Image (cartoon, rainbow, N blue to C red; front, side, top):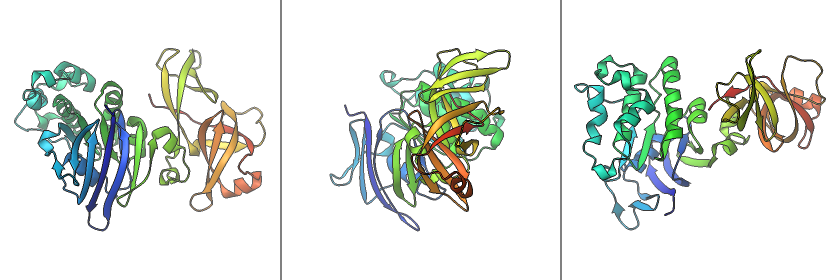
Length: 359
């Protein structure tokens, strides 16, 4: 079986036409990323069968769900899709346990992949089971809504900006559960967002949507390293790096991690040596020098080579670096670029002021 998702939809929308064709992985989390109003939710609705585009083709892991040429259309209720909306829509008269079991009880035993206890443990719902929705916070409602979707044993899980209605504190509450979901389920997930932090924390693959068009797609790490894309222009631009925990410095509460480009010292990581992690290096936290600096408070300084540069905004530039084969971005001023005479091929030292642990 071809474990991929093939899609092509053309749909007239107010202001522009949606026309997206893509092949994405049939497992893991694929993010539909773009500004509000770019057509992400409309594309998600096409995948769910809630829209009838003029042209449609959708094959999920070898199973054809929609083909307008053959006049084939599998209705939404027969697709086996779990759908999580921007706000956790629960049955107000049912306790959390019964909300979770609503679809599960209607699923034939042979099709029940997830168990109630596993979903409860995965999403931290044990203490909420006897509560009614009115007694839940926004983040708790979303966790229950995700759990209910999982217990419907879907072939595909669609998540439409599930944190859009949450404030900052509730987003911080739910992000660890989404990361856990990302690591722990084999169900393919398509996740709509316009938040760069969500994108980086939960996804593996990226479709970048703008005004109803697919402007780029690929594995997340590769896409974040491209300076020609709109995502590189934001304040959150940066690189995603796979690393391994090497050792801990208990005296100074630090950890040393290794990656293909060298080693980094970071704030203490609560994982044993040998653990595989992902770290994020934001472009705004990387400065450049032509010579190795003398004594400095910056602990992470690595030799690098300038690969390409692009002006972004008034007087600013984003520089793509090669650090031992790993792409890293740096944001500098155009004046600094001229003063250092930087050009593709320049040998520099990347001074990394901050590193964020993701997983």
